[in-house]
Length: 579
Image 1 (cartoon, helix red, strand yellow):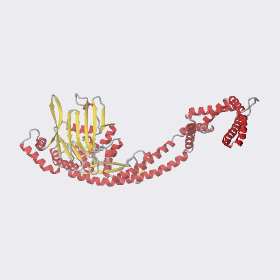
Image 2 (cartoon, one colour):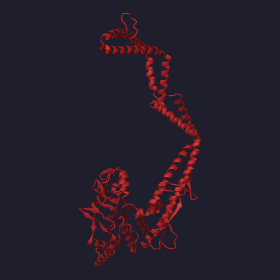
Image 3 (cartoon, helix red, strand yellow):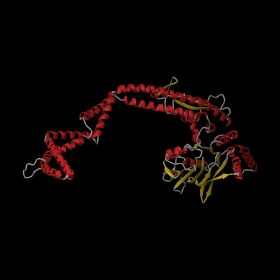
């Protein structure tokens, strides 16, 4: 529910603060006093269009802040979480919009800067604003489907969710099939490219980490002579010296071991030292054998070095074309082979997809039929409910009909539902249009072509009266709902607005005293000149002030005592409708 709105420097408004209440709130005032400005400000706060021209002359920016109570809207916690905003512990939410003269605007939610899209996503859950252009939206049949669906409730929501899941699978399969059915020439060209890539990678017979192993081998091959000389010298020093005056290390160790053997036979405590030296001799012998084996394995083959260089050059060339690493090159070859196989077997896949698309089409058609069945049943009830509301709005002879037809369009997206070809879309296969007749004997026709302005506003009010029971939007705003009506019809409209106010917060701008008198809270909007500047002000009315405003609406400025008495009587007579 909207608790309060503060406006600064918007058009003719220098600064106003309005504290709204639950139930039915009404705004009145002379024509041109600025009543619709207040509604415009609320629209701005919940994500409506911003115009730099709305900034008050002499000010750099206009600011609108709207404070809401979310305690009765647990679903808003999830909506706020989707926008990355945490709920306040006290359940309040502050939406703020600042518009600069240069055309920029800034949006805040609970003090946090958000995008206009985020502000709109939150605002549309909090406020519905119906001005004259919204009444005229009844002329657009595309809006009628949404209105009917909101009336259908959870049963339709569940059926639509199931339908949309099947519809998404069907569309995905159809897109894949369409991709496969591209021109033969395009597929052949793609196959040639892939075949070349597959052959180039697969013929190389690459192995993981092969480039690292070859690079290490190339270093060894390029330094064969140095390795041979170094290992040979090490072998001679350890095991097989060619110089008589310089015995190898193994011989010296063997002599030392013989001396220790003799000493250990005398003193057994030398046994551990003797064993250590014996181990060293054995290790020296093993090292010598390994060096001799390595020396004999050294390959001085220029042919092998050339082969390694050539292999590394091939790998480098493949890396330049298909990946930064050898693993990426191998993966590219695998993916290219898979893509090539899919093209080669495209005909088989096409046949498989055609069968899948046909099967999914049956599933979608069945789900669409269920959605249509729920809508059709709800449409009959909606007709009765709205016709009853129109009767209460002094249109006892009016008839309201909900016309449902199968949607027709592009044959490529057609389904057969109930034996009829129709066009499927995300919302099903139904076209919905509201029909209306104000006079008996006249066949109901599209609302836009036959309803007058007053009739249109009452039809919308009747719809909203019915939908208020299922609509979760806590605040409904009606701007100029009284266009083209008067007399008994105005009293009926007042009663309906008051009725909606029992389940939703309602804000209405009106020129009719009958509507103003039934409101729970009354605000008067007026223009005043102060310091050479025109300002719009807003006052909450009660007691004699409210009587005076209703009297003005009845008889103009300076109402007579009789008019004041009439206003007081009207307020007393209609107060039963106020909350």
